[in-house]
Length: 94
Image (tube, rainbow, N blue to C red; front, side):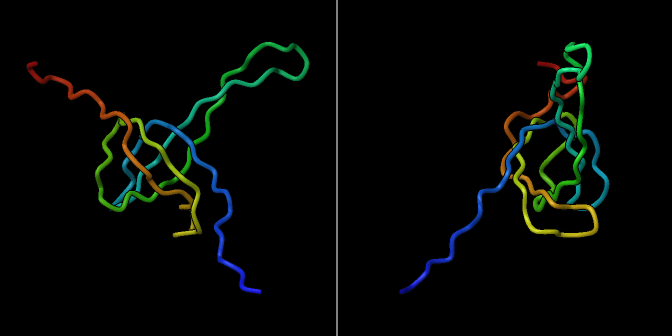
């Protein structure tokens, strides 16, 4: 009976780069809405996660897809899968 090594389902999110904290590190914010427990009104929430950016390709304002991974440092548990949309360059003549 041979068992193949299978990977667990990993969470993936889409968020916006809000900070470049250091070499190969970024912070990604993703927004979501939940219903208030008493009043049932939608309330905006956000979560900020520390993400590993191996190629240093992400800039502020980029929309990125990230995936959960093993702990890479004290805070980093996510890595960049791909850059979905680059942020517009301010002041460019187009």
